[in-house]
Image (cartoon, rainbow, N blue to C red; front, side, top):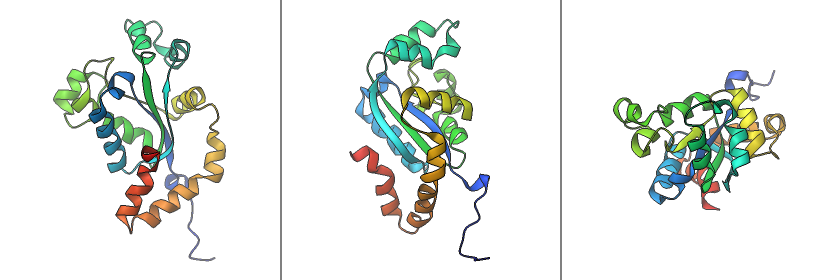
Length: 188
C-alpha cells in the first residue's frame, strides 16, 4: 500500500452547515465584517455564498417548525425585511462549531454567559440575534434545499469535498494564502 495515499475516514471528512447573517445585521457593515472575520478565524471554508432577500413564503417554509410559537410572525417579518447573507460553510464538526461561536439564541443569556460569541457581541433581541445556523445534518439538508436549491450535497461530497480538505492541508504552510483562499467569496 502506498503510504502517500491518505486514508479517508468519516471523521476526516468536512461537515457542511448553513450560516446566515439576518437582514437587520446586514444593514450594519461592521457587524457583517465582524461575522465574516469570525468565520475566517475559525477555519471555515466558504463553499457557497450569496446575498438574497427571503420572501415571506420562503421564510414561512424555512421556519415551519416554529409556526405555533409566539415569535413566529415577528421572525417571518424580520427575515423578509431585507437582504440576508447566506453561506454554506465547511470544516470538521461545522454544525457544532458554528452553533458554538454563534452563542445562545437568547441574546440576554449570550451577553452574560458567552460575551465573545456573535450574539453576545452583536445581538439585539431574541429575534434580532444576528445569525442563523443549522442545528443538525437533517436541518442543514432541508435549509440548503430551500436557500441553495441548485446545490447537491451528495455531489459536493463526491467531487468537491476532497479539494477543500486537501487545500486546507496545503494552505496551512502558508497562512496568508489560506486566508486569501477563505476570503475569496467575500471579495467577489
